[in-house]
Length: 428
Image (cartoon, rainbow, N blue to C red; front, side, top):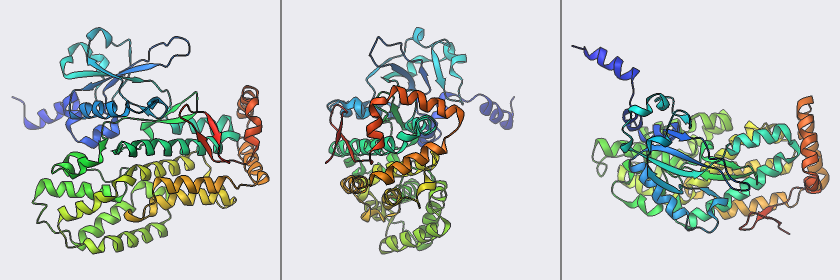
């Protein structure tokens, strides 16, 4: 007979898909909701590639299909989004070791594919994108440094239009994470994917919303302080009566400290700034101390419209650092003003957080008035920063292939708008 210790060791060595995916909802989120995906199909000329993701049949898969159906009611939705296009039952012949491209580390599915009960899975078809937007930006910085800032700003403008579209649908993506922002290689613009955790705003009002919508996770980058606190409320609701549980000053102080000292804030904010933020948030939440957990939750969800905007600004700040543009902040006023604009969203108290329209207008104001000589100097420094033999070869090749864009690259960066077909139109 096996001892309890032997049983535990066996379970650790042979995790099943069910145990891996049922541990916590946030684990699914961070480790790639689906289990495996097939290699993309070989398209005909000028046609997009597609992929199929193998995923357990569960509420998360059902939610992704529901949200995708809403997304697909948007005209030309593929410019902005990567929804699920089709869902079908698994056919064993389609899922073999030869055509599986990627699987979760916990369960090496190709080795066990013939032993699985495929009736528990569903195949979700979507467009295929090879790189994330962050990966594409890092590549552009290496090979075409002149275009780095231009693509960075165009992408942000495109993302703003994307979030405005979600707002019209009364939808919150809730997971603006680098893995979920892929890149269209034809337009070099971001495309938003993974709607597993998305929801419509009215769902926040349901009785089971805290435990159903807010995973227990303390350091997830795309989420503002309201979401972090709501996840704490969800824990309370599962353990006690949230209608009578009083939130104390000590609890709130602890939660705020954990949030402001999370890795993303350590990356983008100085120690002094984080200390000021802790004081700022403490002052902001002071009026609702000594109220019940339910009353706190009702206050937290009032700012839900800005949660995706927060996640977007966090990701753009993180990418700004990743492509090594942060060293230019103090040298150029327009760069400094742009980064401060993003930080305004991240550092603001929840109810003071700017709306999408404000960010769009402020961006246009910053970049439509950059003197040509100043921008040319900035571009020259980006090019010199990458002045290696290998990168020069890439740059020369890119120059030959993009000669028709040269005049635009040398001009001061302007606010770029795109129509519904993705064509460039400069705002005058």
